[in-house]
Image (cartoon, rainbow, N blue to C red; front, side, top):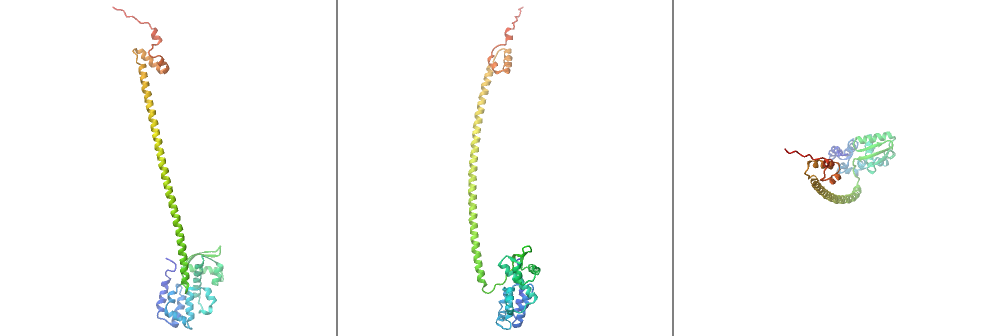
Length: 294
């Protein structure tokens, strides 16, 4: 829930009663509304015609000024013009100081204790910190007390009623904010477009690189395939010639010649080629036996 979202509802009972009150009764209602602990906005009450009439009355003009003080002014304004307002009770004094912190926080985020002590007429830092803590619990501001730096760091505050004529300043501030926001968004759009273009260029470059890599790999594979095929055919040719060669070398009639050739071929291929078709020395000198005829 946003800060101050239920404050308007807290004012409703006073609005209902104020519609039928005039004079002293209306002045009394203003005193009650400004003293009520949960009521922090008063614009709707100020806009009522019978309440506006109090500002024209010498008797009740101070009560109307009091309502204006709580709507959009500060404790400093009260201290500088005490005679223009009725005396404040304790509840009204505390509430006005709380609302003054909200006004100061709307002007800057960091509030030094020295400035707050002066603006709120607080005697000690301890009492100032207690006042700020109460304001946080009342949900009219969010922040952190930095005792080391002696300052209040404001995160968020409720909104106060606008003083007459302040609407123009608010509209100017909103226009400036809108122009600044539009410029920032335009800059962000340009940055995003540049990043998108860089990403597209990068993707195109990566695609071209990948295409070239795939082509190089296919070319390398084709060359390796061609080289392997030529090597295989060469080996097959050598094997066929060798087989033919050895087939001729072993094409002998004598069994001994076959065994001798095989043994010699096992020892040395060169000797095998030189000894092809020759008988061993032992076989050549062995006498041939003649068979007797009967």
